[in-house]
Length: 266
Image 1 (cartoon, rainbow, N blue to C red):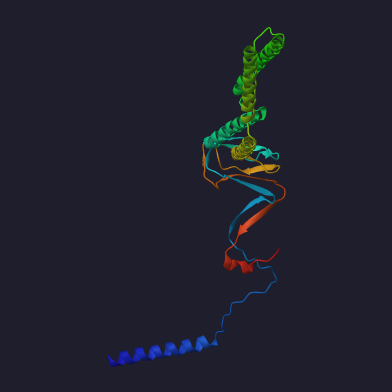
Image 2: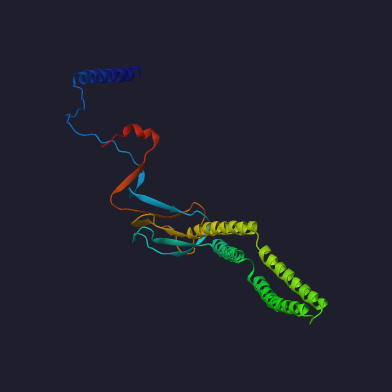
């Protein structure tokens, strides 16, 4: 048993010695490659968009429902051409009310410049005309009675009665003329002109608000983005369309801040 173990130990020692002798004598293997000149490319994976260099963005100023779309994506339009129309009942009602107020203010000022309301002026004019006719007749009667009194053909009382009637007619005429003059005062006309200017300003404001319902192209170009359709609801600030000249175009890329140092022109 001891003899077999000794033989096994001697065999293992001989194998180890042989491995050491053969391993030290073999040359080492070193991997290598031949150097060559080339351009190294450093790539950045990102995203971006391509859009016209001269572009215009149309956004909603006020909320509204898209009532009509006048163009198609990619269509070329001229400056001022309608792109889409919003339905804005409040703006339409405001415009109609402003127009009605302006017409009323104009009519009121015209009546004051004519001297007052037409119906009342006509009534006063008719009264004055009747009084003037009566006065002419009363003046003739008084003159005739005065001659008759001189010839003792009429009494002094009859003359005085005719003269009193003539005086009453003169007073009535003066009252009617004063009434006509008092229909319009200077401050009333000035106030009416101020109301007219206010109505004109209100109509201009309502017209501008109503005009904003129609989105128009700011300049000639192509409608390269149109994300809305008829029936869509636009909130304030929502994108309605993008227009611009398609030549030249520019590319906009988005780069994370850690990668900015790796960028340079070219």
